[in-house]
Image (cartoon, rainbow, N blue to C red; front, side, top):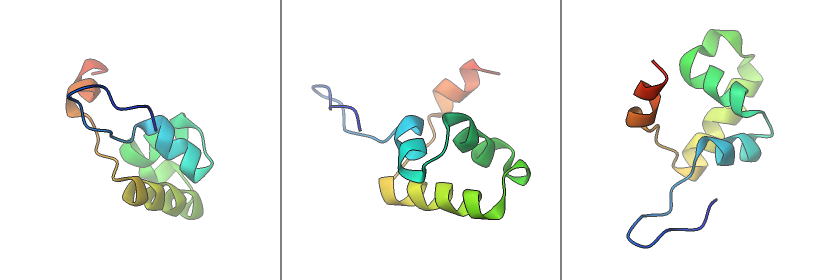
Amino acid sequence: MPPALPGRPLTAGIRDVAHRAGVSVGTVSNVLNRPETVTAGTRTRVLDAIAELGFVRNESARRLGA
């Protein structure tokens, strides 16, 4: 995970999830946004990594791409 900045809690990002699950950032994105496009085994690995790291989707950043 990236180093914590002063006044900001240390949080896991999508890259951290991808690294933990052994997949690409795009695959993590697909699990979150289009899970039907990802195989069950990969989806499980990504969801497990999300749970282990405590990843929380940043809705503000998500709206920027819309």
